[in-house]
Length: 562
Image 1 (cartoon, rainbow, N blue to C red):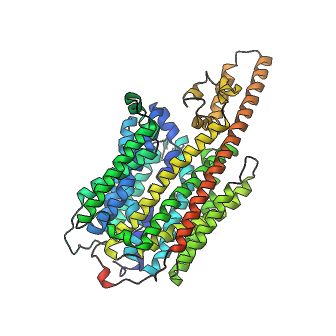
Image 2 (cartoon, rainbow, N blue to C red):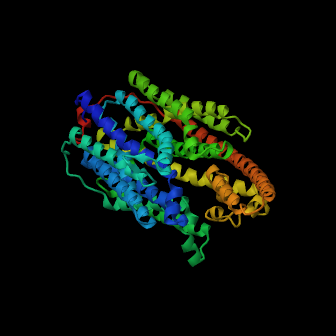
Image 3 (cartoon, helix red, strand yellow):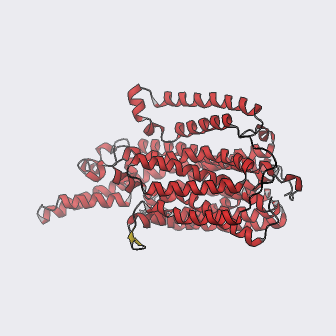
């Protein structure tokens, strides 16, 4: 540990680490605004899911492995490698000449992102005693909150094309912007972050790492965009989606059994199984999984609600999340300060998760007739609840283990939360699409849909009766493009006919928008209620945690590396 470092050096290290983490947290939200332009430029709409999934797979795999490697080789070494890989992957992604290249470099970027994520939370334990960690974990939690708003705003601004350093920006700048920040963070970490030699010879569990990678990659592919990613395979082999998933989960089960066998015999297991004998560790991992799924259900679909119901653009919908982010930052930073003074953390988890559960349940009351101020109030209190829970989970896990296992313990929390988010997005996506399909059974006969069969902008979206396509058709940007194309198509007509056709078109579009919005809102109610149930289960687990004093560092805890 390096509690002896001066406050100035600790601040410089934490600023550089948080800058790196900010880039990683920003990536998922900033890239979302650029996906449309990317797929349009490369004419690769079928590859859209791979641009996101490639990053998700490598990040998920890397987090637990990087956490263990940092315990063996030191946090500084791993952080430098992670920042370098992330910056290089960002640069190469921006320079991609094809969608295949972009997918490959996104996967590389994900490796760097996973390494940074695994170590950014852990390094707090290396620099500060347990009683001090709360305030810093709170600041790191605030970084994630800020990124959720800055991402859509910055991504939209860069993608729309503005002048920056006498250069007109485009979607590639959503990647280029990571490079200078990454270089600066690399320099600061290399200068100020100490590197002490480890007392023993590191032994890497290659077999365990390989099996864990297989388990995580197959799990992600089995739940995230499976039907789209493996469309060609299913078409060629005749496999149904159900059987494909049965095969994939069978692979996961077999690999898991082999992983447990290997880890029991490894001298330096990549994920020590003895950790699962720790009651609090198991409880926090369960909370992280449930919390990850419920969190994504709330945040992801609140953004869509703002776009569908209020007609907000992606940039505007990000701004509309400001009340949630404000509440999150307030309690994340404030609770961290109080925890550092009192040494108590369980009460904050209890109050925070109960508050978040109630607010997620109240989100189910939102309808197309709701006012934004109603949503804003709910978001503020939801953010306050989330802001307490997120950083305290890391603190609770770190307090259970000695310094030489801090990396793998902390990264496990990130892993289970990530897996929960992945599964949650897949589950809620299925609930949303099935709900919309149920409410709009005769949408193919809708006058507006019939009129779009010759629209180039609509054709690019795919099947006009698919639930995701219907939502895309109701987006402000898409409606504007379709309306513009329609106006051009009737331009040769006499003025009276133009007026009649335009009036009928606008009426059909408004009726379609009302139908989709109500179907979406009804489906969203099920998602929010499911999220609330998951949060309620997580709340029960929080009350089962046995609080231990936030201990001070001991000399024999020191692994000799950071």
